[in-house]
Image (cartoon, rainbow, N blue to C red; front, side):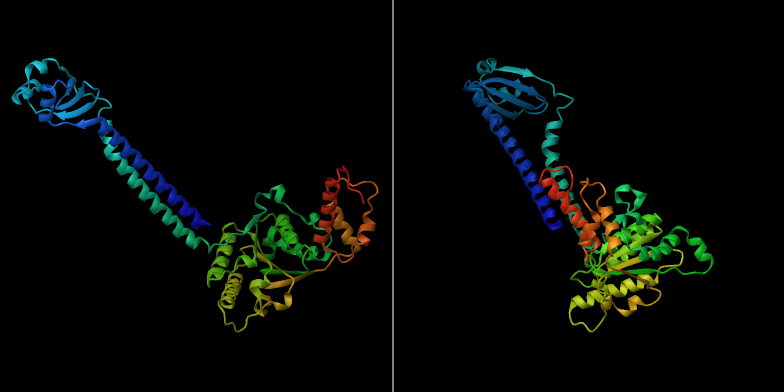
Length: 398
């Protein structure tokens, strides 16, 4: 995409440069046609032939106006009057007397601007064109290395309400919330843990089926602790080229360290955290290098840095043992599908702001949605609202 934009900009600037050059050429050509250069000898012949109506003298510059309306330009001999110069060339004095000769001093002010514009402006355009080319080339070179930077989504900065998710917005998962309260308390009150020599887990692994609320719960932790939340999918880290993934992991942790206390959330961590084996393709080598870099970065988290890595997966059995050993992902929290009471709690959360008709019975709905995840229940509430709006209803009916 960036390469296409760069090419388009180059073509646009080149066309503008060519257009301006063409206009200058046409303008100069028009001036030359309108005011042709006349030799002094030819001027004498034209005067003798009665073709010249007026001659304007400005220093040694002669502007000639012919009887037929055409214009010409010539130069007089320096340090000699025009009449004397013409007489020296044998001009017919009677014909010369019929010519209106006007002496006009060279104008000040803007008189010098014309020649400078015609000389300097094309040069400036040429220099500007190549400056733009070099600037774009430099930008393109920087962008060529820019793809090694991680671009996580950042939430929770400044506590903006539209991005703020708390434990109250996460239905069910009572046991998981209780375990994660320790993480929140450490981020908010880390001093009391450090004074007792405690080492808070560097990583927490959230294990659960798709739609059970792993991402939502991770964002709630960051909001409860009021720290920045860096979210990235593991599939966004790995590229075809070996070394890009590890560079993005370094970039991700570097960004988190710049803000101080933070939570790094890596979704679908099994994409880079699969058990290492003997790989024969570049893809395996790239994934293993990325995993090695992640392990190295987690080992490098200091006790007082306040950075916690949250990983989410639905395939814990495929993860590399080195990722799960103590000192890395110390905690493993399993998120089960919600029971009937949790489904009702989740459904109430997703029905906020939706006008329900009096006949809507949430108890009946949750009884009929056994095995639904939180995401499934959110979709049920949303589809009901869409269906009601499509039928021009002002309330959601069951």
